[in-house]
Image (cartoon, rainbow, N blue to C red; front, top):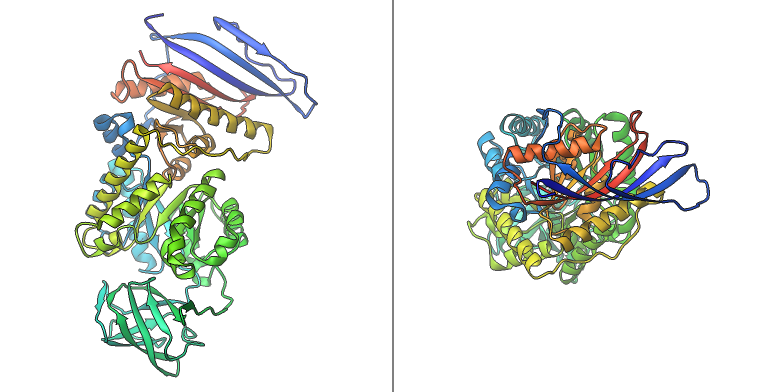
Length: 570
């Protein structure tokens, strides 16, 4: 046995009634356990299997489609399995980083998802960025997903017309108007809705971007507001604002739709450009998410994921339904901080992350992570602590907004996220701070419940055995997400042949997508991928991997099966 790879496997096989279970006679030892159950149209068979695999076993020639993105491959060579960062990084693309050179630098620095905010820029500009990213993926070996963030019914947005931020000085007087003008005008900002000042009175306060600057209304002329700056700060392009009276938010019910006519046009644009995610703004109810998902199912042949942005008090009241309906959540802390007391943001953030983990949905923590780096080359220590806390809470991803879109130090900001994430993840493993997830059953059918239990057990085994990596073979990525949900210590390599699955998994914690031409023969797929990684020096003799496979029934293999195997590379 010294020259062989030891293979201990726990196999759970679900067979259609009347189908034949593959023979286990080739195994050195096998147990077959059947229990009488009511006839639900299928049979359940479970087996524990002990066998060995020769190092010289013949496999099919390696396919050209095998491969992982170049950044993960370099990271694995330089840092090893446990050195790979598990928290994913999202960068908002703007004028400061939209060149081909800058996009490549962000990809090399660890950008997993590029976010395009449809509040800014023309569709031609966004199209150019998308095609640059896809070209980099194709020609340079990156695997950067593209996300479009819809504008939504944003009645509370003002723009000063300049391409970058402006400093607002104390006691300066500014005019807020809904009247259109080209370019920029001194001390004048344009609101995006003619009813923006409806119900607003002299003495009300205007808070910009949750506190970046603050004004008081000193005069109201028609729909225009003349405001005096009482708290100086930064005025960003397309800034969001809110009105306050006597320390309370002024609420006005304009009954605007979640998706506007412009949003639907932007969505059609995203479909035509084959983006990977839509982030839906100002989601207050699950029905708007379901409406968009139904629309995508009829308009796109690709699997495009829909994320819901949580940025209002009403969305918190309907949080569970929104999470269940969506493919993921973005915690938009800037807008959320306007709707709820600031001191509640940390606990609300942690609660949202926990609920998303329970319901197996990826969650992005966004807004003001490194806000000072819009202007300065180093972050505040408080900002680094904020990033660390999001990583410690096991958020799937962290997002840069203005830091990368309009800031002068976008690449440095991304490096701060990368270094901080890696360090906190390492500390959590060393201190055994893994956050155990109270089990929330997701599956209803027996196959889904079986897959869920297999993945729960696989993560526990991987942590207890101290394996180097987890390999999962999956078509649509579901089992990879179930493994990620449990936040294992070793990285998860998800082998799939579906490009849309690879792009979707770029947002899931700890998952490294790996493109492979999966065959109906699971053992052949496992052998090919291990041999390929050995040939590239990505795994070496003595490495131990836990293998989880998810095989759907085919004509040649008429059973669905999930299995766990522990393999030692020889």
